Image (cartoon, rainbow, N blue to C red; front, side, top):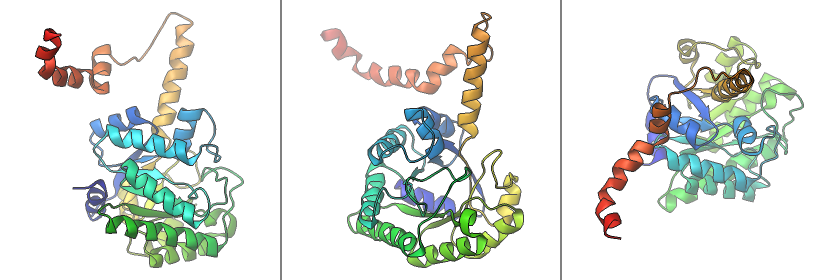
Length: 292
């Protein structure tokens, strides 16, 4: 079963999937090891971890798709890649979708922000006009169909940030059109109340994704409440990054006092990274190593 097929099967279930977001291969492995069914490559967290810069469109297409490839190689659960604005015009969008599919992603997100894009819960967001927004999703869907004709597949997660600048009605109108154009998953970013979240999920029977940023604009509801509203995926883009950064800062501060609190045991660290798996697999070739 392809990763895209796995994701479709998950979305067909009557539940809201908790989706911790990764930023590199190691964080993705930990998510998979803890039994989560899918993950998303957070643009915010990936930009911070890969280049040490904020998520303001500073990473190139090549850097992002390279990170996605490393993550997809490390896990066997569906990965949703962050394709941002598609990195150019409609033809660039098609290239982006195909590139993420080749990298091993089950889905790719394409959004309607102006380039360079911004994190969905930070000031200064702006979106392109409806025509350009629709062309991006139209191109993404065309790329998906071309991939299918070649024996490959990927899902299109269509995102709008219009709520911030133009209000909820405009965001709903864009999402409805995204559905008509053939998107597989809808994502209306940064609703500000449970009532708005219910309006969003009522516009289409397609799967919807909620984006829960601790301290952000969207209510941080329970998984049960999100399912009741109508969401199929609850993404948590910063939970792992924030917890990792807090732990590292605490350790660095404690080291000044000759203390290193809360460390994972070295044996567990080796096991989770994959040392034991490597040793077990490499033992099959021990005879040839002895001969040389």
